[in-house]
Amino acid sequence: MEVKLTDLARSGGCAAKYSAARLEELLRGFVPAEAENLLVGLAPADDAAVYRLDDERALVFTLDFFPPLVDDPALFGRIAATNALNDVFAMGGTPLLALSIAAFPESLPNETLAAIFGAADEQVRSAGAILAGGHTLRDEEPKYGLAVVGTVHPRGFWSKATARPGDALFLTKPLGTGLLLHAAREGKRDEQGLEEAYGWMTVLNRAAADALRPFSPGAVTDVTGFGLLGHAYELADRSGVRVMLEAASLPALTGALDAAAAGVRTGGDRRNRDFAGPYVEAEGVGEETLALAYDPQTAGGLLVSLPADKAVVLQAAFAASKLFLCRIGRVEHGEGVALV
Image 1: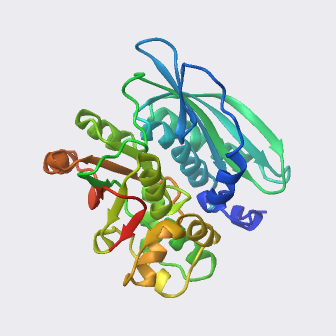
Image 2: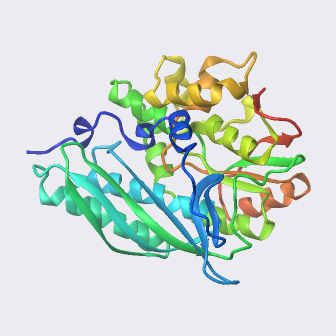
């Protein structure tokens, strides 16, 4: 009997993430290891940990997993793998090795599990890495993801804590995956929008990172479960700057704003507003645009800050490579985030 994966999950994709505000509270008293070679850990936290091996090499290490957000097992495996691998690209690194993190009901057919693992393996290979094993538990709610190790130069990794006033802000994928997937679960399917969402959630940020690397960006993070405003707030807070986002410039997947206007919201929307809302100014911005900006993304694009004098050349480089790039704002002196 065919099993619908999403029927086994209470929430799926990055919308299942723990509240960012609660995570901050839990980790506030956690003392990171005192190691001079730990270049990025919890003080401050970033998209992945970075550990220096020597003067030329550092390890980038991350893990990410979540319950299914789609019923197609191969698509689920590909999206989950993309989401985990993208953390390494967000740090400017190159993935080397991945291990599966899995939990599945014993009732799932072997064909379903094989499709998840097989699609993840294909995506890991596309990222230039190797899927070398993993660990699988019995659990009534399916979950899948990867632990990924990559490399980066110790002085060449990207951080969300290095944006500077005068930088321009860019986004490398459109927004709205959470809205469209949740709308479909509520019976409000937008077929074109869903196909776009599926396509973007399986696009590795490898090509975008490769195109960005020669420009020495100011700061980089990937937009996932905390939504654009949550991740923009993290960038502003870590960097000690003010992020100005232009509401009219935010790129949306087909049907995402319609879903927001119809009242569709994920559980992650509320958690993201609780986390970033006190630091976001959005006077006069429509609720559907706010919902898009708070919407939890799965395998989202890179949020990039770059000196404004490099912006036109960066846009030309992305256009020449046929890569998506949207200028969405700027960085100023101050604090917090403004959506104007």
